[in-house]
Each structure stands twice: as C-alpha cells, then as structure tokens.
Length: 390
Image (cartoon, rainbow, N blue to C red):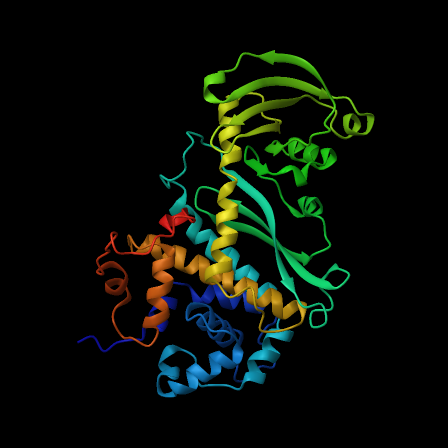
C-alpha cells in the first residue's frame, strides 16, 4: 500500500516553488513575516478552492478536524481565522496575479494544438468580455455599481484554443467594458473577438495600428459608405461582404481607414448578425465563425462561477477580493496543467471533484486521475459546458 504524501501535497509538486518565491520577493510579501508565509496563505486559499469550502471559517474547521495531517500537507500548522483574514487584507494581490501568469506560461503551450478548435487558422484567437459579480454595497462600499447595489466586473481575455485566461482586470461595476481595452497589449497578427459593447473606433484603430485584427459586432446605427461588395455563398448563411468607410465625422476621424462589413444569418438561432473587422484577407465565413468562437468565454465565466469560489468573497477589501480571484484562477490553471501532463481523459469538472474528496488520501495522484474508468452512460450530463470536455 502506498504510504507517501497526501494528494494535496502531491498536487503542488508539479509546480516550481522557486517561481512562486520570485513573485513574493518582487513585492516583499514575506517581509517581517515569521510563521504564516505567502506560500502558506496560497495553500490555505487553494485548499478552500479545491475542497469547495464556503469561507475561511470553513477552511480552518476542516483543517482542525485533520490536524495531524496538516504538517504533511505542507501547511505547517492550523492557524486562526484572523491570521488568514489579515493576510488576505494586506498582502499584495499582485503576488498571486504574477504566479498565475507563470502558470499560464507553462500551461498554454500544452493547449496550442488542441483539436477542439474548429477553424483552420494559424493566428492566435482571443475572446474579450466581462462578467459581473453582485455584491452587497454596505459591505463592499468601494464596489460601486448602482444606487443601492454593488458589483465587480472580471474583464477577461481568453485564449480560445485552450479556454485559458491570459488577462484578468478587476473593476467596480460602473466601469464600462470598452475602457479596459486601454489596458491590453495587443499581439501582432492575433484576432480579438468582441461583442458590440466594445465598438469604440478610436480604440479599434489602436488594434489596427498594433497590426492585430479584431472581429466585433456592429451596432444598428452604424453609418457607412460601401466601397466594394464581394460575392458571398448565401447557402452558407452569408448575406454580404463589403469594404466600407465610416460616414459619421467623429467615427471617420477615429477610424480613418477602410473596414470590412460581413453580414451573416444564423439559421440555428434565427438571428441576423453584422460584423466589423480590419482583416481584409480572411474568408467571410471565417470571420463569422470566429465570432462564434467567442462563446468560449461565456462558457468560461459559467464554469468558474459554478466550480470556483468567487461568488461569495472571504474578505471585504479590494485586496482581499483580488487575492481570492487570482488564487481561484491559479487553481484553475493548475488543474488544466495537470490534465494535460497526466494525459487524463477526465474533464476539468471531474478532476476537481476527484481532488475535492481525495485531499487527505495518500493514493498516487497519477493513479487517482488516470486509472478510474469513466461510465459515460451513467455520468451526469454537463452539455452546457464544452471546454476541456467539461
């Protein structure tokens, strides 16, 4: 019988502690800290994410019930609720954001050849959107949204090929989505797919100047002059493919070069969609199908809200909220990495469920995640989420 490390400890052996310590040193996170280091804070919060705890009290209660195992899990000792709370309130959230960037760097290459990507396209494809998380304005007074309601927004740039978040920016609910385009560093030759909330021609022109491409839904009141109209295959749903210039003086000044306008009829949903893009070479149907890939970010938002602990926050300050969100994203990336490294057929959801009930087990993690047989006929259907075979 295997008598080695607990599954929770095995999980973190896949990742470089040195890289985490570099993030801590960058922000002096452990300055004058004796017992409860940033690494311990990270393990406590990740434990809460993996085991689906409802709060810091819940985490501490669970660990106290297994106090003899805590040291061997890498947690050293059970600390008080106030110790974890103070750490979340005061230690720089950027430590965990930077560590998430490192995890993304080692995980993203594993998904670059993912066969789930439906288009024959060499370019990197990103989907950009935001999701709103409602908060109590009395408690989260800084999270302004409406007169009697608080909220934060998670503005997310998603690599469509792997459903991996490459950029997350947290604001209060009043910040308009389009403003966050100013925070992005656009990658040359990459596609940025967005909905109509991001139609701001001065910002879209910045994407063009960066030699990147965008695909965005047009607003109904768009005024333009058609320069050229190309033949389209109407049997495939296309209705028009035009080269245009903007007519409104302000819009024409903000975006002074040609645009491409593609109209597509989505028969499945009985809706007519109009897209704008600065890519003049790709097939019109490819432009329409690129926008369809934007749905991946909606699935990502739905997944993290269902399976990560980010709807109820364990601290009230902006720092505590951002810390919890970034450690949740780190947990997501860790599971995505392990899924590829162990070459398991289990979905992300199944891996999370297995880890949640096996934290205090000493079974080898590779056997735990690869030897269990899947009974597709009896398994519960999660067909609303398709990324990573969720």
